[in-house]
Image 1 (cartoon, protein in one colour):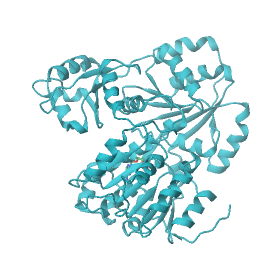
Image 2 (cartoon, protein in one colour; image 1 turned 90 degrees about the horizontal axis):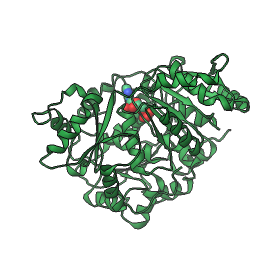
Image 3 (cartoon, helix red, strand yellow; image 1 turned 180 degrees about the vertical axis):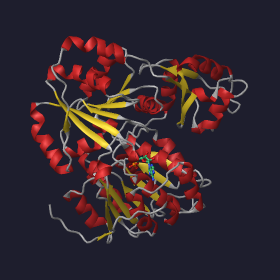
Image 4 (cartoon, helix red, strand yellow; image 1 turned 120 degrees about the vertical axis):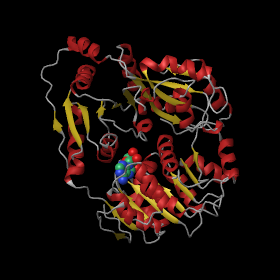
Length: 506
Ligand code: AMP
């Protein structure tokens, strides 16, 4: 494809965070997060972004691109001006949630900094309220952002930066017209930033129409970076797939494994099978309410569920520390989907393994992937398969996770912070040792805390008997993906204010 637009390409250089144009507050947060060195995309793009130039960043997921644009936006934001100054468009709700989280983390030393998430399936009213209170950054999916623009609740006059994140995916999902309309409504003098794994013609057209002499940053990854994800495949007949999966799960030790399927129906069937065999498993697909998607992701992130079976769209924004194994139960239909799936593991320099179950019909696609990525996928030999052996394999895999999740019916809107929950559990009233408390995740109206299994029932009791920030909240143990009382209550609270569901969930 030879579609040419004028741009300048910057060389990729090794550098330190201290030599980037970032404030002491941002450098402080980076130190706290123990990011020792900028990733190549950060080193190459932050100076250009902070200088206010347009930028096309070609880099894969896992490259640290979110921090690249979030740090640059935070560097430029004016805190006293309580108007939207940056708009970030993402293809999915999950990615929006991940980007919003990253803004909150990186902006935690910016007093009064606020970021709002605008996605379908969440109440339009609370989004309008956030705008009325004054928010600096809006992150969202194009459909919902456009709704707010058309209704006039989102004003654009203070917007200085727009970011199109995972732009190729956004166009693949049919958001092209919405993105165009949004770009046309923004101030002409703004900075336009686009990140994309690939730059097909459709993206080049957007760049040409909406950008001014963009700087193009492209990371040609060194050989060793590519090797951080070991890619394997196992040839299997369709009737041997489930057995092969069990064999892979036992052969490749993992704390967290993500299993991708092409279809929602396969996700449901496979999850049922694994769950009935007693494995720690959850499902993530477009058929679930947003509440359940958020919940299963929180449990997967805090390691109280070990396996997650997902479709591509639902699994897109998954960013889990320590995800060591990705399995393609169904071989992906396109190269870029393959690249995105395997990019869920081996994040930011950590090692990971990606294994695909492949069949006779996948030969052509494998060749295409190998030639597009320049990496040969290693073939795994399983030897003769004995279908009757699946029982012992499953029994060996059916061990419970060491952590369990507790759902608490209060969140950010109730002024609950992680320290308050930790305090309630470990303080005089709680009496639980801090070493038994895992990841705490605060959402708008509820929170999740991971607690070591032996201490979890006591933790629930203590949380229900005690108070957090002087208020009583309901705490329940989350087991499986089925609803219990407190979950149903929390869901009802969320639903009450929900306007409509996004039509684009898959
Ligand atoms: P992304 O490509 O934006 O999805 O980022 C991938 C992961 O890398 C995220 O979990 C980030 O928190 C993490 N990350 C971003 N920048 C750095 C860095 N400089 N050093 C280590 N980890 C990073």
